[in-house]
Image (tube, rainbow, N blue to C red; front, side, top):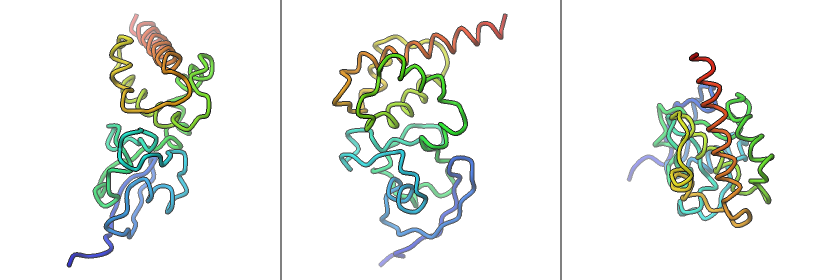
Length: 166
């Protein structure tokens, strides 16, 4: 029978962390229970709803499907870290302006998923935006305002990039 606990080292929101974690503990439970990072939510616990989305080494991942021990050596960014760094401020403002959030339950996962897409640069089509956020379930908004907010942010970021390159 394997070890019940494992020692891991990872970077969470820019901070190096060493921890002893139960081998079967999910990343989302580790972040919420052990570090108080409750911005990412627990929804379906089957990887379907997207409420627990975090970035692992820059890629969106479902925190309920990843074990904390699998993140040994990884860089994990949560909604708290992305918000605190200011990288999401324009996207968050667009969500507010476009009324792309209502109850707010899906919003952290939606913002992280959108940021992953926008970090690639350019202005994705509305179809591409819809496809990229399709793994994030929202019961309130109908998605139109969310797509608007992401598109608005992409256009503004691209305009800023073009201005710097001129």
